[in-house]
Length: 516
Image 1 (tube, rainbow, N blue to C red):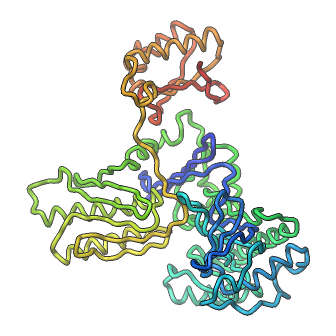
Image 2 (spheres, rainbow, N blue to C red):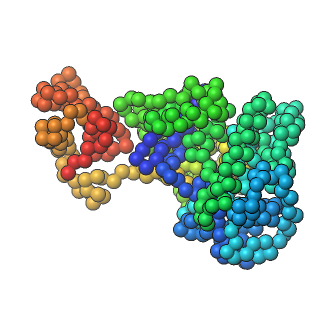
Image 3 (cartoon, rainbow, N blue to C red):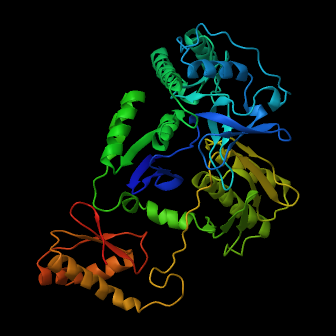
Protein backbone atom coordinates (compact mmCIF):
# COMPACT_ATOMS: atom_id res chain seq x y z
CA UNK A 1 0.00 0.00 0.00
CA UNK A 2 1.56 3.27 -1.16
CA UNK A 3 0.72 6.45 0.74
CA UNK A 4 1.54 9.86 -0.70
CA UNK A 5 0.98 13.42 0.44
CA UNK A 6 0.96 15.93 -2.41
CA UNK A 7 1.11 19.69 -1.84
CA UNK A 8 0.74 22.10 -4.73
CA UNK A 9 1.08 25.88 -4.52
CA UNK A 10 -1.61 28.05 -6.13
CA UNK A 11 -1.99 31.81 -6.26
CA UNK A 12 -4.00 32.16 -3.04
CA UNK A 13 -2.54 29.29 -1.00
CA UNK A 14 -2.03 25.54 -1.25
CA UNK A 15 -3.91 22.45 -2.45
CA UNK A 16 -3.29 19.33 -0.38
CA UNK A 17 -4.05 15.80 -1.57
CA UNK A 18 -3.63 12.50 0.26
CA UNK A 19 -3.28 9.48 -2.03
CA UNK A 20 -3.58 5.77 -1.23
CA UNK A 21 -2.28 3.57 -4.06
CA UNK A 22 -2.75 6.52 -6.39
CA UNK A 23 -6.42 6.99 -5.39
CA UNK A 24 -7.39 10.33 -3.86
CA UNK A 25 -8.83 9.87 -0.35
CA UNK A 26 -8.41 13.34 1.21
CA UNK A 27 -8.36 16.78 -0.36
CA UNK A 28 -8.01 20.12 1.41
CA UNK A 29 -7.18 23.67 0.53
CA UNK A 30 -5.38 26.23 2.63
CA UNK A 31 -5.48 29.94 1.95
CA UNK A 32 -2.55 32.21 2.72
CA UNK A 33 -2.85 33.99 6.06
CA UNK A 34 -5.76 31.77 7.08
CA UNK A 35 -7.65 32.93 10.16
CA UNK A 36 -10.12 31.23 12.47
CA UNK A 37 -8.89 27.68 11.94
CA UNK A 38 -9.47 24.86 14.42
CA UNK A 39 -6.94 25.07 17.26
CA UNK A 40 -6.28 28.83 17.10
CA UNK A 41 -6.45 30.57 20.49
CA UNK A 42 -7.79 34.14 20.61
CA UNK A 43 -8.27 36.85 23.20
CA UNK A 44 -11.99 37.50 22.87
CA UNK A 45 -14.53 39.79 24.46
CA UNK A 46 -17.95 38.65 25.68
CA UNK A 47 -20.51 40.66 23.71
CA UNK A 48 -23.84 39.14 24.67
CA UNK A 49 -25.28 36.49 26.98
CA UNK A 50 -27.99 34.25 25.54
CA UNK A 51 -29.76 33.05 28.69
CA UNK A 52 -32.25 30.89 26.77
CA UNK A 53 -29.35 28.97 25.17
CA UNK A 54 -27.16 29.04 28.28
CA UNK A 55 -24.44 30.42 26.05
CA UNK A 56 -22.64 33.61 25.09
CA UNK A 57 -21.49 35.34 21.93
CA UNK A 58 -17.83 36.35 21.84
CA UNK A 59 -16.09 38.85 19.56
CA UNK A 60 -12.81 37.41 18.20
CA UNK A 61 -12.64 39.51 15.05
CA UNK A 62 -14.86 37.47 12.74
CA UNK A 63 -17.74 39.26 10.95
CA UNK A 64 -20.16 37.33 13.17
CA UNK A 65 -19.68 36.83 16.89
CA UNK A 66 -18.48 33.37 17.83
CA UNK A 67 -20.63 30.98 19.90
CA UNK A 68 -19.54 29.71 23.33
CA UNK A 69 -21.86 27.30 25.16
CA UNK A 70 -21.74 26.77 28.91
CA UNK A 71 -20.75 23.10 28.40
CA UNK A 72 -17.68 24.27 26.46
CA UNK A 73 -16.34 26.45 29.26
CA UNK A 74 -14.61 23.47 30.87
CA UNK A 75 -14.55 22.64 34.59
CA UNK A 76 -11.51 24.84 35.24
CA UNK A 77 -12.90 28.01 33.69
CA UNK A 78 -12.43 30.04 36.89
CA UNK A 79 -8.72 29.13 36.87
CA UNK A 80 -8.32 30.07 33.19
CA UNK A 81 -10.20 33.34 33.69
CA UNK A 82 -8.10 34.30 36.71
CA UNK A 83 -4.83 33.43 34.94
CA UNK A 84 -5.85 35.33 31.79
CA UNK A 85 -6.48 38.50 33.78
CA UNK A 86 -3.12 38.16 35.55
CA UNK A 87 -1.36 37.67 32.19
CA UNK A 88 -3.11 40.71 30.64
CA UNK A 89 -1.94 42.80 33.59
CA UNK A 90 1.62 41.48 33.21
CA UNK A 91 1.56 39.84 36.65
CA UNK A 92 2.45 36.29 35.55
CA UNK A 93 6.03 35.26 36.28
CA UNK A 94 5.68 31.48 36.37
CA UNK A 95 4.32 30.48 32.96
CA UNK A 96 4.54 26.78 33.78
CA UNK A 97 1.87 27.13 36.52
CA UNK A 98 4.03 25.56 39.23
CA UNK A 99 2.99 28.14 41.83
CA UNK A 100 -0.51 28.75 40.49
CA UNK A 101 -3.38 27.71 42.76
CA UNK A 102 -6.30 26.21 40.86
CA UNK A 103 -9.76 27.61 41.52
CA UNK A 104 -12.73 25.35 42.35
CA UNK A 105 -14.43 23.83 39.26
CA UNK A 106 -17.61 25.38 37.89
CA UNK A 107 -21.01 23.81 38.48
CA UNK A 108 -21.76 21.30 35.69
CA UNK A 109 -25.43 22.37 35.69
CA UNK A 110 -24.79 26.07 36.24
CA UNK A 111 -25.91 29.10 34.25
CA UNK A 112 -23.72 31.15 31.92
CA UNK A 113 -24.62 34.40 33.70
CA UNK A 114 -23.17 33.04 36.97
CA UNK A 115 -19.75 32.50 35.41
CA UNK A 116 -19.08 35.23 32.83
CA UNK A 117 -20.34 38.76 32.24
CA UNK A 118 -20.64 41.17 29.31
CA UNK A 119 -17.38 42.83 28.11
CA UNK A 120 -15.26 40.28 30.00
CA UNK A 121 -11.93 39.43 28.30
CA UNK A 122 -11.76 35.70 27.74
CA UNK A 123 -9.20 33.27 26.31
CA UNK A 124 -10.93 30.95 23.82
CA UNK A 125 -10.02 28.32 21.24
CA UNK A 126 -11.64 27.65 17.85
CA UNK A 127 -13.50 24.32 18.06
CA UNK A 128 -15.38 24.67 14.75
CA UNK A 129 -14.57 26.92 11.84
CA UNK A 130 -17.22 29.29 10.44
CA UNK A 131 -19.76 27.22 8.48
CA UNK A 132 -22.41 28.69 6.16
CA UNK A 133 -23.95 31.71 7.92
CA UNK A 134 -22.70 30.68 11.37
CA UNK A 135 -19.70 32.13 13.15
CA UNK A 136 -16.97 29.98 14.76
CA UNK A 137 -17.78 27.71 17.68
CA UNK A 138 -15.50 28.19 20.68
CA UNK A 139 -14.19 26.31 23.66
CA UNK A 140 -12.64 27.78 26.78
CA UNK A 141 -11.06 24.45 27.66
CA UNK A 142 -7.71 25.04 25.96
CA UNK A 143 -5.64 22.25 24.38
CA UNK A 144 -2.34 22.40 22.49
CA UNK A 145 -1.75 19.49 20.11
CA UNK A 146 1.72 18.06 19.61
CA UNK A 147 3.10 15.07 17.76
CA UNK A 148 2.71 12.55 20.58
CA UNK A 149 0.50 14.29 23.15
CA UNK A 150 -1.98 17.07 23.77
CA UNK A 151 -1.26 19.60 26.52
CA UNK A 152 -4.30 20.70 28.55
CA UNK A 153 -3.54 23.66 30.87
CA UNK A 154 -5.26 23.83 34.29
CA UNK A 155 -5.94 20.12 34.34
CA UNK A 156 -4.47 17.27 36.38
CA UNK A 157 -5.36 14.11 34.45
CA UNK A 158 -3.40 11.87 32.09
CA UNK A 159 -5.39 9.97 29.45
CA UNK A 160 -4.42 7.54 26.70
CA UNK A 161 -5.91 7.37 23.19
CA UNK A 162 -8.54 4.63 22.85
CA UNK A 163 -6.85 3.54 19.62
CA UNK A 164 -3.93 2.20 21.67
CA UNK A 165 -5.47 -1.14 22.59
CA UNK A 166 -2.48 -3.02 24.06
CA UNK A 167 -2.96 -2.92 27.84
CA UNK A 168 0.77 -3.21 28.62
CA UNK A 169 1.61 -0.33 26.28
CA UNK A 170 -1.17 1.78 27.79
CA UNK A 171 0.19 1.19 31.29
CA UNK A 172 3.76 1.95 30.13
CA UNK A 173 2.71 5.26 28.59
CA UNK A 174 0.63 6.21 31.62
CA UNK A 175 3.54 5.60 34.00
CA UNK A 176 6.02 7.36 31.73
CA UNK A 177 3.91 10.44 30.97
CA UNK A 178 2.70 10.77 34.58
CA UNK A 179 6.35 10.96 35.67
CA UNK A 180 7.12 13.90 33.34
CA UNK A 181 3.78 15.73 33.64
CA UNK A 182 4.22 19.32 34.87
CA UNK A 183 2.07 20.61 37.72
CA UNK A 184 -1.38 21.97 36.81
CA UNK A 185 -1.19 20.59 33.29
CA UNK A 186 -3.11 17.61 31.95
CA UNK A 187 -1.90 15.40 29.09
CA UNK A 188 -3.65 13.27 26.48
CA UNK A 189 -1.39 10.63 24.95
CA UNK A 190 -1.96 10.36 21.19
CA UNK A 191 -1.91 7.20 19.08
CA UNK A 192 1.43 8.22 17.53
CA UNK A 193 3.09 7.81 20.97
CA UNK A 194 2.69 4.02 20.86
CA UNK A 195 6.10 2.37 21.18
CA UNK A 196 8.01 5.66 21.43
CA UNK A 197 10.87 6.11 23.88
CA UNK A 198 10.85 8.66 26.68
CA UNK A 199 13.25 11.10 24.95
CA UNK A 200 10.79 11.78 22.11
CA UNK A 201 7.91 12.29 24.51
CA UNK A 202 9.95 14.67 26.66
CA UNK A 203 10.97 16.69 23.60
CA UNK A 204 7.35 16.93 22.42
CA UNK A 205 6.24 18.11 25.86
CA UNK A 206 9.06 20.69 25.95
CA UNK A 207 7.94 22.16 22.61
CA UNK A 208 4.31 22.35 23.78
CA UNK A 209 5.31 24.14 26.99
CA UNK A 210 7.42 26.61 24.99
CA UNK A 211 4.42 27.27 22.72
CA UNK A 212 2.21 27.87 25.76
CA UNK A 213 4.77 30.19 27.36
CA UNK A 214 5.16 32.26 24.18
CA UNK A 215 1.38 32.68 23.93
CA UNK A 216 0.96 33.76 27.56
CA UNK A 217 3.82 36.25 27.24
CA UNK A 218 2.01 37.73 24.22
CA UNK A 219 -1.09 38.30 26.38
CA UNK A 220 0.61 41.12 28.32
CA UNK A 221 0.55 43.36 25.23
CA UNK A 222 -2.37 41.77 23.36
CA UNK A 223 -5.58 43.59 22.50
CA UNK A 224 -9.02 42.03 22.04
CA UNK A 225 -9.36 40.02 18.79
CA UNK A 226 -5.64 39.14 18.77
CA UNK A 227 -4.59 35.58 17.95
CA UNK A 228 -2.49 34.53 20.94
CA UNK A 229 -1.50 31.00 19.91
CA UNK A 230 -1.88 29.86 16.31
CA UNK A 231 -2.28 26.32 15.05
CA UNK A 232 0.35 25.21 12.54
CA UNK A 233 -0.60 25.28 8.85
CA UNK A 234 -2.87 22.55 7.51
CA UNK A 235 -0.15 20.68 5.65
CA UNK A 236 2.02 20.50 8.76
CA UNK A 237 -0.93 19.47 10.93
CA UNK A 238 -1.70 16.57 8.53
CA UNK A 239 1.93 15.47 8.78
CA UNK A 240 1.89 15.83 12.56
CA UNK A 241 -1.25 13.70 12.90
CA UNK A 242 -0.58 11.11 10.19
CA UNK A 243 3.17 10.67 9.94
CA UNK A 244 2.93 7.52 12.02
CA UNK A 245 1.47 5.89 8.94
CA UNK A 246 3.94 4.60 6.39
CA UNK A 247 4.27 7.47 3.95
CA UNK A 248 6.22 6.63 0.85
CA UNK A 249 6.42 10.12 -0.61
CA UNK A 250 5.70 13.71 0.25
CA UNK A 251 5.77 15.75 -2.95
CA UNK A 252 5.81 19.57 -2.94
CA UNK A 253 6.17 21.89 -5.91
CA UNK A 254 6.81 25.13 -4.01
CA UNK A 255 10.47 25.71 -2.94
CA UNK A 256 9.59 27.73 0.18
CA UNK A 257 6.99 25.25 1.40
CA UNK A 258 9.40 22.42 0.63
CA UNK A 259 12.11 23.93 2.84
CA UNK A 260 9.65 24.64 5.68
CA UNK A 261 8.10 21.18 5.67
CA UNK A 262 11.44 19.45 5.36
CA UNK A 263 12.66 21.37 8.40
CA UNK A 264 9.44 20.53 10.27
CA UNK A 265 9.78 16.81 9.55
CA UNK A 266 13.45 16.97 10.50
CA UNK A 267 12.26 18.23 13.88
CA UNK A 268 9.44 15.75 14.54
CA UNK A 269 10.69 12.66 12.68
CA UNK A 270 14.29 12.95 11.37
CA UNK A 271 14.23 9.39 10.02
CA UNK A 272 11.52 10.37 7.50
CA UNK A 273 13.25 13.48 6.14
CA UNK A 274 14.32 11.66 2.96
CA UNK A 275 10.72 11.04 1.82
CA UNK A 276 10.15 14.79 1.36
CA UNK A 277 10.82 15.61 -2.29
CA UNK A 278 10.50 18.75 -4.37
CA UNK A 279 8.71 18.35 -7.68
CA UNK A 280 10.37 20.28 -10.50
CA UNK A 281 8.61 18.93 -13.57
CA UNK A 282 7.19 21.22 -16.24
CA UNK A 283 3.73 19.67 -16.09
CA UNK A 284 1.64 20.80 -13.11
CA UNK A 285 1.99 18.47 -10.12
CA UNK A 286 -1.72 17.65 -9.82
CA UNK A 287 -1.90 17.10 -13.57
CA UNK A 288 1.22 14.91 -13.55
CA UNK A 289 -0.20 12.58 -10.89
CA UNK A 290 -3.70 12.45 -12.35
CA UNK A 291 -5.21 14.22 -9.32
CA UNK A 292 -6.88 16.91 -11.43
CA UNK A 293 -8.85 14.27 -13.32
CA UNK A 294 -9.83 12.51 -10.08
CA UNK A 295 -11.16 15.77 -8.66
CA UNK A 296 -13.38 16.22 -11.71
CA UNK A 297 -14.67 12.65 -11.35
CA UNK A 298 -15.15 12.55 -7.58
CA UNK A 299 -16.67 15.91 -6.69
CA UNK A 300 -19.69 15.80 -8.97
CA UNK A 301 -23.24 15.23 -7.80
CA UNK A 302 -23.09 11.75 -9.35
CA UNK A 303 -20.21 9.40 -8.47
CA UNK A 304 -19.68 6.00 -10.12
CA UNK A 305 -18.92 2.91 -8.04
CA UNK A 306 -17.59 -0.57 -8.86
CA UNK A 307 -20.06 -2.98 -10.35
CA UNK A 308 -21.95 -0.45 -12.47
CA UNK A 309 -23.80 1.40 -9.70
CA UNK A 310 -23.56 5.05 -8.79
CA UNK A 311 -24.12 7.49 -5.92
CA UNK A 312 -26.10 10.73 -5.93
CA UNK A 313 -24.82 13.12 -3.25
CA UNK A 314 -26.90 16.09 -2.09
CA UNK A 315 -25.84 18.71 0.46
CA UNK A 316 -28.44 20.55 2.56
CA UNK A 317 -28.22 22.90 5.53
CA UNK A 318 -29.44 20.21 7.94
CA UNK A 319 -27.75 17.08 6.59
CA UNK A 320 -26.08 15.31 3.68
CA UNK A 321 -28.12 12.77 1.71
CA UNK A 322 -26.60 9.95 -0.36
CA UNK A 323 -28.71 7.76 -2.65
CA UNK A 324 -27.32 4.43 -3.89
CA UNK A 325 -28.49 3.31 -7.34
CA UNK A 326 -27.84 0.08 -9.22
CA UNK A 327 -27.42 1.74 -12.64
CA UNK A 328 -26.54 -0.74 -15.38
CA UNK A 329 -25.52 -3.58 -13.06
CA UNK A 330 -25.73 -7.13 -14.31
CA UNK A 331 -29.41 -8.09 -14.52
CA UNK A 332 -28.78 -11.82 -14.63
CA UNK A 333 -28.09 -11.86 -10.88
CA UNK A 334 -31.00 -12.19 -8.49
CA UNK A 335 -32.02 -8.94 -6.83
CA UNK A 336 -30.74 -9.74 -3.32
CA UNK A 337 -27.28 -10.77 -4.54
CA UNK A 338 -27.02 -7.79 -6.86
CA UNK A 339 -28.20 -5.35 -4.18
CA UNK A 340 -25.71 -6.68 -1.61
CA UNK A 341 -22.82 -6.43 -4.08
CA UNK A 342 -23.68 -2.84 -5.07
CA UNK A 343 -24.31 -1.79 -1.47
CA UNK A 344 -20.94 -3.13 -0.27
CA UNK A 345 -19.14 -1.30 -3.09
CA UNK A 346 -21.16 1.82 -2.25
CA UNK A 347 -20.15 1.61 1.44
CA UNK A 348 -16.47 1.66 0.46
CA UNK A 349 -16.91 4.65 -1.86
CA UNK A 350 -19.10 6.53 0.64
CA UNK A 351 -16.44 6.21 3.35
CA UNK A 352 -13.95 7.65 0.86
CA UNK A 353 -16.31 10.47 -0.14
CA UNK A 354 -16.91 11.52 3.47
CA UNK A 355 -13.17 11.97 4.02
CA UNK A 356 -12.61 13.50 0.61
CA UNK A 357 -15.33 16.15 0.89
CA UNK A 358 -14.91 16.49 4.67
CA UNK A 359 -18.65 15.98 5.09
CA UNK A 360 -19.70 16.47 8.71
CA UNK A 361 -22.86 16.47 10.78
CA UNK A 362 -25.67 14.06 9.89
CA UNK A 363 -25.32 11.83 6.80
CA UNK A 364 -28.29 9.74 5.65
CA UNK A 365 -27.67 6.92 3.15
CA UNK A 366 -30.45 5.30 1.16
CA UNK A 367 -29.07 1.88 0.21
CA UNK A 368 -30.70 -0.41 -2.36
CA UNK A 369 -33.48 -2.34 -0.60
CA UNK A 370 -32.55 -5.77 0.72
CA UNK A 371 -34.57 -8.14 2.90
CA UNK A 372 -32.09 -10.61 4.37
CA UNK A 373 -31.14 -9.47 7.94
CA UNK A 374 -27.70 -11.10 7.57
CA UNK A 375 -27.00 -9.03 4.45
CA UNK A 376 -28.05 -5.88 6.31
CA UNK A 377 -25.59 -6.77 9.06
CA UNK A 378 -22.84 -7.27 6.46
CA UNK A 379 -23.42 -3.76 5.07
CA UNK A 380 -23.36 -2.28 8.58
CA UNK A 381 -20.12 -4.09 9.50
CA UNK A 382 -18.51 -3.11 6.18
CA UNK A 383 -19.34 0.55 6.70
CA UNK A 384 -17.93 0.48 10.25
CA UNK A 385 -14.73 -1.11 8.96
CA UNK A 386 -14.29 1.42 6.15
CA UNK A 387 -14.99 4.34 8.50
CA UNK A 388 -12.46 3.10 11.07
CA UNK A 389 -9.65 4.72 9.04
CA UNK A 390 -11.29 8.14 9.36
CA UNK A 391 -9.47 10.57 11.68
CA UNK A 392 -12.73 12.35 12.59
CA UNK A 393 -15.10 11.07 15.29
CA UNK A 394 -17.71 8.93 13.58
CA UNK A 395 -20.86 7.11 14.73
CA UNK A 396 -22.48 4.54 12.40
CA UNK A 397 -25.98 3.20 13.06
CA UNK A 398 -27.40 -0.05 11.62
CA UNK A 399 -29.83 0.03 8.70
CA UNK A 400 -33.36 1.04 9.66
CA UNK A 401 -36.49 -0.84 8.57
CA UNK A 402 -36.73 1.64 5.70
CA UNK A 403 -33.26 0.69 4.45
CA UNK A 404 -31.67 3.96 5.64
CA UNK A 405 -28.33 4.25 7.43
CA UNK A 406 -27.51 7.21 9.65
CA UNK A 407 -23.96 8.39 10.22
CA UNK A 408 -22.73 11.29 12.32
CA UNK A 409 -19.26 12.65 11.56
CA UNK A 410 -17.44 15.36 13.47
CA UNK A 411 -17.99 18.66 11.73
CA UNK A 412 -15.23 21.23 12.31
CA UNK A 413 -15.02 23.05 8.97
CA UNK A 414 -17.21 23.70 5.90
CA UNK A 415 -17.71 20.82 3.48
CA UNK A 416 -15.35 20.83 0.50
CA UNK A 417 -17.49 21.33 -2.56
CA UNK A 418 -15.73 21.73 -5.90
CA UNK A 419 -17.65 22.91 -8.94
CA UNK A 420 -16.98 20.26 -11.57
CA UNK A 421 -19.42 21.50 -14.18
CA UNK A 422 -17.76 23.88 -16.60
CA UNK A 423 -19.39 27.04 -17.88
CA UNK A 424 -18.50 27.89 -21.42
CA UNK A 425 -15.73 30.50 -21.21
CA UNK A 426 -16.81 32.05 -24.50
CA UNK A 427 -20.57 32.39 -24.06
CA UNK A 428 -20.64 32.69 -20.23
CA UNK A 429 -23.53 30.24 -20.09
CA UNK A 430 -25.70 31.82 -22.81
CA UNK A 431 -25.49 28.72 -25.00
CA UNK A 432 -24.00 30.48 -28.01
CA UNK A 433 -20.31 30.56 -28.92
CA UNK A 434 -18.19 31.40 -31.87
CA UNK A 435 -17.18 28.33 -33.89
CA UNK A 436 -14.92 26.16 -31.70
CA UNK A 437 -12.89 25.20 -34.77
CA UNK A 438 -11.47 28.73 -34.71
CA UNK A 439 -9.72 28.21 -31.33
CA UNK A 440 -6.60 26.87 -33.06
CA UNK A 441 -6.38 30.00 -35.18
CA UNK A 442 -6.88 32.22 -32.13
CA UNK A 443 -4.02 30.45 -30.36
CA UNK A 444 -1.76 30.85 -33.38
CA UNK A 445 -2.52 34.58 -33.54
CA UNK A 446 -1.54 34.85 -29.86
CA UNK A 447 1.70 32.94 -30.54
CA UNK A 448 2.53 35.27 -33.43
CA UNK A 449 1.92 38.32 -31.24
CA UNK A 450 4.04 36.99 -28.34
CA UNK A 451 7.00 35.86 -30.46
CA UNK A 452 7.18 38.59 -33.09
CA UNK A 453 5.67 41.69 -31.50
CA UNK A 454 6.40 41.11 -27.82
CA UNK A 455 9.64 39.18 -28.50
CA UNK A 456 9.15 36.60 -25.77
CA UNK A 457 12.20 34.33 -25.55
CA UNK A 458 10.43 31.26 -24.28
CA UNK A 459 6.73 30.50 -23.74
CA UNK A 460 4.78 27.50 -22.53
CA UNK A 461 1.24 27.00 -23.83
CA UNK A 462 -1.22 25.29 -21.46
CA UNK A 463 -4.24 23.76 -23.20
CA UNK A 464 -6.95 21.16 -22.71
CA UNK A 465 -5.72 17.56 -23.43
CA UNK A 466 -7.84 17.45 -26.59
CA UNK A 467 -6.11 20.54 -27.98
CA UNK A 468 -2.74 19.19 -26.90
CA UNK A 469 -3.37 16.06 -28.96
CA UNK A 470 -4.46 18.16 -31.94
CA UNK A 471 -1.31 20.31 -31.88
CA UNK A 472 1.13 17.38 -31.45
CA UNK A 473 -0.35 14.62 -33.63
CA UNK A 474 1.82 13.32 -36.46
CA UNK A 475 5.43 14.00 -37.37
CA UNK A 476 4.65 17.23 -39.22
CA UNK A 477 2.50 18.57 -36.38
CA UNK A 478 1.17 22.09 -35.84
CA UNK A 479 3.87 22.64 -33.21
CA UNK A 480 6.60 21.71 -35.72
CA UNK A 481 5.08 24.16 -38.21
CA UNK A 482 5.32 26.88 -35.56
CA UNK A 483 9.03 26.07 -35.11
CA UNK A 484 9.68 26.38 -38.82
CA UNK A 485 7.66 29.59 -39.07
CA UNK A 486 8.88 31.49 -36.00
CA UNK A 487 12.27 29.77 -35.43
CA UNK A 488 11.31 29.26 -31.77
CA UNK A 489 10.13 26.12 -30.01
CA UNK A 490 6.73 26.34 -28.28
CA UNK A 491 6.49 24.26 -25.11
CA UNK A 492 3.11 22.56 -24.80
CA UNK A 493 1.54 21.30 -21.57
CA UNK A 494 -1.75 19.54 -20.86
CA UNK A 495 -4.05 21.05 -18.24
CA UNK A 496 -7.39 19.33 -17.75
CA UNK A 497 -8.55 22.11 -15.40
CA UNK A 498 -8.94 24.30 -18.52
CA UNK A 499 -12.02 24.23 -20.71
CA UNK A 500 -11.86 23.05 -24.30
CA UNK A 501 -11.70 26.65 -25.56
CA UNK A 502 -9.44 28.01 -22.82
CA UNK A 503 -5.68 28.42 -22.95
CA UNK A 504 -2.92 30.36 -21.25
CA UNK A 505 0.73 31.24 -21.81
CA UNK A 506 3.50 31.09 -19.19
CA UNK A 507 6.77 33.00 -19.71
CA UNK A 508 10.34 32.07 -18.81
CA UNK A 509 9.88 33.44 -15.29
CA UNK A 510 6.93 31.07 -14.77
CA UNK A 511 4.46 33.98 -14.81
CA UNK A 512 1.21 33.99 -16.76
CA UNK A 513 1.22 36.31 -19.77
CA UNK A 514 -1.83 38.52 -19.89
CA UNK A 515 -3.44 38.65 -23.34
CA UNK A 516 -5.72 41.54 -24.22
